[in-house]
Structure formats: structure tokens, C-alpha cells
Image 1 (tube, rainbow, N blue to C red):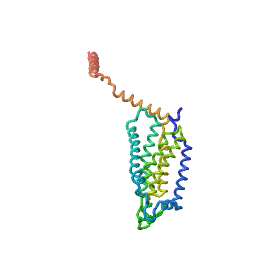
Image 2 (image 1 turned 30 degrees about the horizontal axis):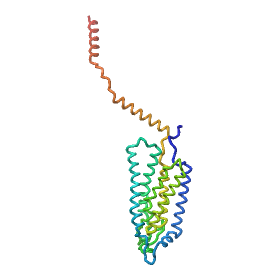
Image 3 (image 1 turned 120 degrees about the vertical axis):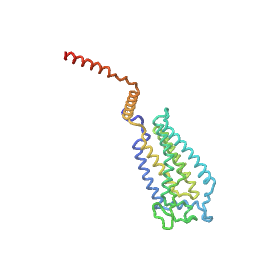
Image 4 (image 1 turned 180 degrees about the horizontal axis):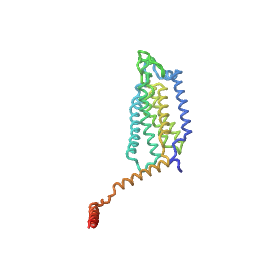
Length: 288
């Protein structure tokens, strides 16, 4: 009754478990990139050593459809959610409940923050794309995560995978099935992650990214969406609602009193004249 006006999208226990799973996943991805040659083995498998090229680099499906057409479609979809959330923020829709508004804001913020965060992190990355490496016909050395660059090398700015981020924000759509249908939400999350991984895989086929580049993008997207689900308030406590209503009512009454017509001021001069006349008359009688 006095707790909250609505429930959270995820219980605190589920959020803690997902946070632990993300921490473990980060260690696994770091280990793959730092201690194994899985990235190189997968890139070797799609590289044509005889021709010195990645055969899929200029393939229509990977270069034109995935990297241009699909990217723009996903950007337009993201802008649609962002625009709707901004419009509701400026002029809240009367028919939208607190839970629906929360879901919309989580999806809109995910559509904005996932690509933006990954794009910013790339600027600080020293890792190169496969097609830039000496191993695959480029002119840069292969450097693992957090390894120092040789003096003659330049920063590659290729980690995490940027193109996959254009699709990975879609996993935030799972909130539309929370909290009532968690299994459906899990299915939507899995489909969105698979779609984002497929988009990233096409870029791996082109030689644009290593596998761990895509895995880090998936991890970042999951972390951002989980943070938004945990951090954004679903509703204000009932006591706060009552307090805000009381304050608003008080301000409204105060404004009404301020705008109400004020009574005409009492004319004091005639009264003072009568008092003066009375005093003068008494003085005159005493003088006689």
C-alpha cells in the first residue's frame, strides 16, 4: 500500500545474477583475446593467402547490404524510438502509464548509448582491424588488448566492433515483456543478440574485425541495458506521490489567493478628522 506505485522490471536478485554473469563473461572474453589465438585462427580461415585478400571484403551482402542499407534502417528505427521518447518527455502523453514510459525510455537510451559508447571506446583502442595487419597484407603489427604498441605503429581504433552496435541495442526491446513474461523477454534477448552477432560476423568475414571485437560490443550492450533497467526508477514511492500532490495543491492555492481581488483599502483621513474634532472639542470645554 505505501511501498511503490508499480513493480520493477527485474527483481534485485535477477539483476545481481546478471551482473555476476557479465563479470564472468568479461573475464572469458579477455582471456580469449589475451591468451589464445582464436581471433587469428578465425581470421586465417576466411583470408585468401594466395590472393592476399579477404574474399568477402567487397561482397554485396557484407559491404553494401549489411554495412550500408541495414545500418541505415537500424539507425532510422533507433531515431524513431529516441524521437518518441523526447516528444513524450516534452509533452507527456496522458494515456501512457508509468511502466510503458519506463520501457520507452530504456529502449531510447539504449539506442543512443550503445552505439555512442562503443564509438567513443574505439577512439582509445590500439587494436587494429585484421585487414590492416602485416599478417593479412597491411602494414601494422598485431597487438593484443592492453599491449603496448611498437614505436613505429599507430593506434588502430578498431576495438570494439562499431557496426555491430547498430543492431545490438535491439536487445533492449526485451523490456516490453517485463516483468510479466520473463521467458518471452529472454527469447527476445537471445534473438537480438544472435542478430547483432550475425551483423558482426559479416564484418569478420570482410576482415574488418576479430571475433573478440564483436564479443566486446555484445558485452558492452548487455551492460548498458542492464544498467538502465537497474538504475532508472520505475515509479516514485506512494509517499512521494502524496507529498508532491500536497506541494502542488499548496502552490495552486497560493497562486489563487495571489490572483484573487483584494478588498479596497479603508480611508483613514475622515476617521482622523473626526478624532481631531473630538479632541479639540474636549479641550475647548476644559478651557471654559
